[in-house]
Length: 470
Ligand code: FAD
Ligand code: NAI
Image 1 (tube, protein in one colour):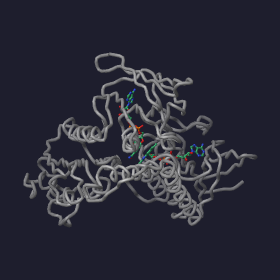
Image 2 (cartoon, rainbow, N blue to C red):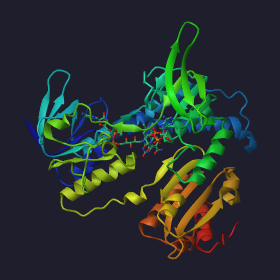
Image 3 (tube, protein in one colour):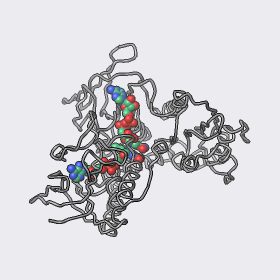
Image 4 (cartoon, rainbow, N blue to C red):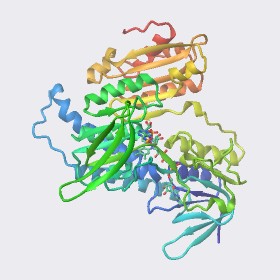
């Protein structure tokens, strides 16, 4: 029986990064993945394929709607959906090989097959012929999450689909219904809307991106409406049913609107994007007494240890924000603590990005959270429309909103809608990690002409209400 210091179950961003760090810290390490390829949800059916399609569809949409303004003639522009999908698949495959290489380079033993606990140190790996048993001093569970659904909606994965199917639809639909105006709904809804599909989003709350600052929900609603997406807010979905007959192959969704009136929607597909649940099936957690909470997430303490000594859990399977970079941080944290280092994770400062166009990026507290906590705050805004660089590239939608403590001037939250928001947010992430004030950011020299000047201007607006270009 092979013995390891560390066994990691699951090869998503949480799992494979844990394995790399374990090996860097001198541990003999194994990683187990039940799918034929490494990379987990993020690489195979999540972050990377969705961004590949978002980038391709944005290029098409820009060519169709914006290029002529730049003097570029695109007469005869056509869309090859099959090619777009195969490019996305190639991007995934390149990254799959990248992880294979990293495992080899770091001498991580890779096992393919579903893992389950025999004891707190012994793991069984189901093989196509025989099972293998390996032992580890420490086990790290990084088995991630899977799509969840709601009452009255059964995911048949043919007409009533999850993000996984939506990333590989063979034929371009005419109409797509999306249940859930959260991150997946808006990102994948954008992909199809840009390619000419009629997209309707049904959302339970009275605003999309309900976890974000309300200013973001407002701006994105208006921006995505311009793209042609229709929003049905404050609508409670009651049922979704495929209607398959000789004449049509559609799906019918019934929802209650804010006045309790039943509304019926008909479309080619219904994408259900109402959140994700922990993936613990087949692990036999109860055999060793690893506890889960009522929502099914694995219970962990501050050191991310499960209810059993020596067994840790990280990433989506423990809940919290379900983001790849959060899973990675947790993997590194667990391994560094195991060798006696003193790492920390600042859960208050995990950047949250939505890769729509314009992009959304957010960090720290929203205005409402500040007010709910009784904090005395000041708020500064700067619109991209006032920025030279944004005008040059014709990306004038959006703003930077900065919130700081009214007395100390410490930055408490930053919320961006706009071009390159996903990269801009990192400047404030570093600044906030070092407890910077709005004045600190405002007095930092920013290159001209760049989008980052919107951050400086918002900081000026927050610090002394004197932005230079507004
Ligand atoms: P996962 O990536 O889910 O990996 C878990 C792995 O464990 C899987 O490969 C699974 O097969 C394996 N596994 C499960 N059970 C077993 C078992 N018993 N034995 C062996 N292996 C097992 N996050 C971002 O930060 N940015 C984004 O842009 C982004 N986009 C997304 C887009 C979509 C469409 C989706 C669905 C998610 C997106 N996410 C994004 C979220 C991100 O994918 C997750 O937060 C991240 O993958 C979590 O990493 P993880 O390592 O915890 O789990
Ligand atoms: P989400 O939590 O972002 O959004 C779900 C939405 O569905 C919410 O707005 C919710 O109010 C709505 N909803 C719930 N029940 C409903 C009902 N009965 N009827 C109508 N609407 C209903 O979850 P989503 O979009 O499924 O994404 C799952 C996870 O994947 C998220 O936690 C996210 O962090 C991660 N992800 C991250 C991305 C990124 O970082 N860019 C991209 C895609 C996913």
